[in-house]
Structures are given as structure tokens and as C-alpha cells.
Length: 532
Ligand code: 9MR
Image 1 (cartoon, rainbow, N blue to C red):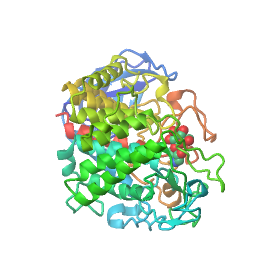
Image 2 (cartoon, protein in one colour):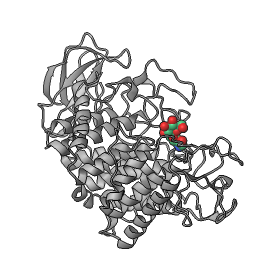
Image 3 (cartoon, protein in one colour):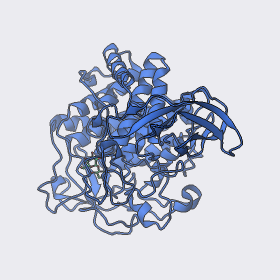
């Protein structure tokens, strides 16, 4: 019996999915203490999932709105996990997923009062990173030492990548821009929690300062990553002393950097004029550099010495131009940045056009963009999966990092709600959060530390090496991915089941900053909009 293991809002849809149970007919909602049966109804018609052999039946208890703790019983099938119905059903997820970034901080110790049992010494100082030959020029010859401290570890590995920081930062900054009043009162117990800046922005600033160090002050170009030559073993942060390199500049890095710093400049102006000015200058310089190097692809194939960590190599820059142009245009109001409209799809690290749509729509009436977002949301609404969510409507939703697709669809739906005021889009967005927190074919809640059956063995070096049974909390696992690139020993029968909760499975069970960001947005947006 699959359901959102975090819980439900009293006056929002409440759906569980019972799988492969042809004989069952009714379901019962029972209080957690087993004393009272408080609701019962018939299960829905059996449906065949298009992404596996799974057959589903819906247990819809939307009408039941009493707060408390309950479980679902289906005779002949069994009991679901216990869930709550409350006004802040997803608050714990909202806090945990943002706090997840604190646990990814690179160059500072995580103190017990913030990190609990996951406290640890600082990771890589990154105060002495070498300019790799691929990045060398007359100002900074190969071997020049630069300082590039701080930021977040990208994922289960210990490297820092500008391109992936791009979409991550854009998504978090947009969460703040869309719900500023909510976030001004939202705390995650981080070292900066008592300052005058909302915690989400404090967290963003920690990575922003690192990003700024990745711009070459001589020409405005932006290096792709600060990295080891090859991936570390499964050890704690900062244990290996392998040299760190700053590698080749590139167009995607420069434009993602320009977009983030332009947006940050606008958002941070009210908190720190100095940092906002620095960001805007950095954005303009990166944009100018990109104009001189409009299609410089990152490709580490022939690097000497070799670099084999994640490439985040992108060849197609139209979306990055659009996004950077949109952010610079909104921040500066200068026509020269106003981008020509392009087609945009669901965001991913190499497809960021939609972030530009969101920003243009946030500040200007753009009928053409409005239409595109709403028609995409309506396509999601038109045909739900057997788990009654837009996620899995197409089998293409299941690729590397599929869970971020579920979350990004949710963000699109929240934007459709903001544009139309139609609450059906909030309900659909909520159904994608339900998917991520348990209402899916695997039955897993994919956020560590949440619910009764969640990811326990993510491909995440600290979680593996720290000797603590529970993984570092608040991290979203990648999710089902039939590509199975990790070639670990596990079996699956179909795309929506291609998930293995084992450390080895870096293709289905890693965590990454670009996957956490959309669930931060989604969980917090739903808390902000509270379906009372
Ligand atoms: O999320 C990335 C995915 O889209 C790519 O197909 C994959 C292979 O290049 O890399 C993923 O990103 C990884 C990055 O390269 C290194 N850090 C961990 C990231 C998540 O697996």
C-alpha cells in the first residue's frame, strides 16, 4: 500500500495506491492506536501501469479530513505505514531537504548543534587549487594556485561543478522569489539562522561565494569545475589529500554563472548591497566573455593530466543564452539583454530555458510564455499515471535523476497555479510530492530520514563512511533509472522499478544538489500554499 509517508493536509487530496490486489474491494482508515475505524470506501477500478507490470487500485480518502495519525487497512493485503493528517504535513520534508545543503558544505566543520550525530570536521579547504593546463593562459599559467574554498559538494562525490550549481542555485533563488514572506520565517538551524537573512539565502550565499571564486578576474571567463583528477574512494570529506584542479572555462559555465549571479544580485540587494553589486558586475563580465566565446563546449577527453570526474558537458547553448539573458534583463532592465523567446522543456542541468520562462513570467506579463507553461501543465493534467500523478505519464520520465523530473513537474504546476489561480494545479503538484515520498511503484520514500521505508544506502560518501546507521538526512535519491549505468548487481523488471537502495548504485541511488533543489521548491511551495 503506497502512500506519502510524510502525511496529508486535511483539505487536500488524499490518495493511497494498492498494487496487484485483484481480489480486494474495500479499504479502511484506522487510527494509529488501532482503536477506531474512521473511514472506509471502495477501491477504484484496477489500472495497468504503462511503466511496469504493476496493476494499481486507488484508495481515495480525500473526504476524510480529521487530523491525527492513521493507517490504511486492505483486507487480504495488509496495512500501510502510519501517516499523519495535519496542517503542516510536509514541513519536516521542507526543512530537511533545505538542510540537506548544509550537510553538503565543503570547507567548514559541521558542528553537532547544527548537524546532530552527523557532525564532522571540515572537508576540502580548497584554498590552493591548481590551474589545470586546460585552463591556462598568460595571466594564469598552468600550476598557478588559486583559492576556491566553500560551496557544496555536488553529489555523492567531492567535486564542485559550476554547470550543476547553475540550475541548483536558480531553482533555490526562484523558490525564495516566489515565496519570500514564507521563507523569511523559515529556519533550518544552520550557523547563520540568527542573522537578518532568510536561511534559504544564507545557504545559497555559501555556494555563491564559491561560484564567484571560479571566475577569472582577468577576462570574466568561468572555469567548469574545481575537482580531483579522479573520484575519491568511499571516505569521509577531507580525508584524501589529492590535489585539486580548476579546469577549462566554457560557455555553459559562463552563462549559468551569469544567470545565477544576475538573479542573486536582484534577490540579495535588500540584504547586502555590496554582495549584490559584486554579483552584478560578475554577471556582466561573464556575459561579455561568453559573447567572445559563444560555443565553447566542455570536453575533458584529451586533458593532460587526465581528469575523469563528472563532465556536465553540454553542446547546446541556446537555453543557457536565454536563461542568462532573462536574468540579466530582469535585473538590469536593459533591453540589450532581452532574449528572443525559445522553446523550453522540463528543466535539467543541461536544459535551463524554463528557468528563464519562470523569471520573465514572475516580473512581466508575457502572454506567449504564459500559454506555453499552462499548456504544459494541462498536458500533465490530461493523462495521469497508474499512481495518479503526472510523473510517469511518459516512460521518458525515467532517466538518470528521474526523481528530479517529478519535482520539476511539480514546480511547473506551481507556476501554472500562480499564473491562473486554479487550485487543480496545486493538487497535481502535490501528487508529485506524494510520488516522491512513497506513492510510487517501488514504495520507497526517496528522501533520506523521512517516513517508514526510505532510502537507507545512498551512493553518498559521507553516508557510507561515517559509521552511522542512518544516512545523512534530507537528501533525495536519484530514483528509478533503467539505464543502469552503474552495472551494480541488481535486478529490475521495468523502468519505474529500476531503483536499488544500495551504495553501489550511483545511477539510481546517488544524491545531487540539482535533484534536491526542486524538491526544496516543491515541498516549501506546498507548505506556503497550505491546502487548508
Ligand atoms: O546527473 C548527471 C547525469 O545527467 C549524467 O548522465 C551523468 C553522467 O555524466 O552524470 C550525472 O551527474 C553526476 C556528475 O557527473 C558527478 N557528480 C555526481 C552526479 C550525479 O550522478
